[in-house]
Length: 100
Image 1 (cartoon, rainbow, N blue to C red):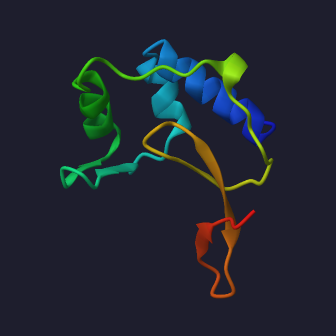
Image 2: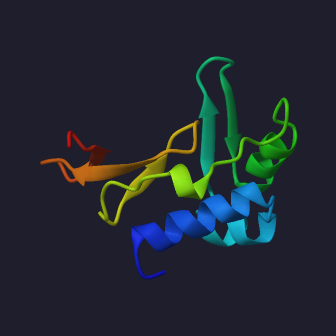
């Protein structure tokens, strides 16, 4: 993957097309998805896939033409609304959300 932009374009395209084989390539094998409203927690790609397949009303789609990637840092997270947010290193070596 050559850049964060390439990653997110590929990720959102796979998400929009329900291409679970590509999504599995793109996420960590031990991916965690948490839903604070319900307290649900999915760990691992199989659990994430089940969550996506049972999402009420179907998995949301994102219009790549209307999506703006604002940074090219190498560490990102995806919000529940499928928005990419860059992470910045903290003095302790952990990651936290960027203040930019």
